[in-house]
Length: 295
Image (cartoon, rainbow, N blue to C red; front, side, top):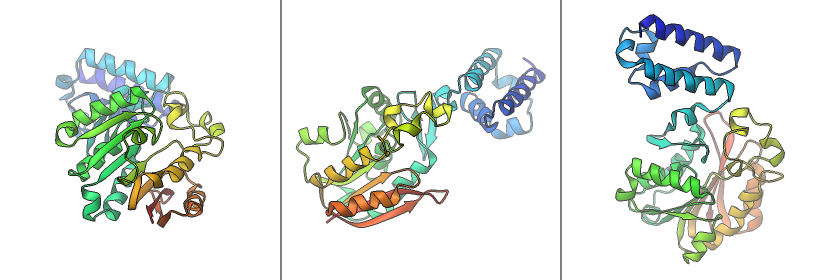
């Protein structure tokens, strides 16, 4: 393969991306993810390309990029992995692709949970999906016990792989449990024992799910997206049930969609068992998280 061959292909792919309304940076991301190139190689159209991209690899890249354009398959699923915070996570259509804004949930926890009770207590990640939040919690609280729950057995398998990849199974005992929200914890008799509940639950109204961009609507698991008629079915469950499992002062935080913050705050207030209710913004200034503590 010559340099010209590669860059002829590269330029054709960029043109096709523009016509298909696919961000061109995704092509660079896919190439860099699957090769040993760096951004400078691509930017300078380096001759090193012939040493690092074999004809076989170029064929694979082309096949994957065609799937991106024609099937609208998310580029993260094509690569099979994504970087989230400092974690290298495997992702498949069995799990929701971890979003950059969700990274902030760990920063909020770190800011508000500095007392020793949180450092060595029991935390739960509900709807763990790829395991991103649970693994990040385990990294931040190395002396804590982390439970990760998901209703999807396929998702839990991915989460376990990711915990192993990021060396958390040996360093930090994360327990993975299959079930709906708090049900596995009830079976383990963990009532009034948790110091923290963290969740990125489904929060999109049912009639909006199919209208999402095709990459999401066609390929990401609807069970991780669909929050019922108003998008708040699962958040209501988390609001109502968490007080039975959290200790006094226990921390509660969820992610939500734009426009839901005041409703979630009202739910927490109406419950009567929460205090220090706060709304937190994401990188774009959107009200993305609500946190609270148990009285």
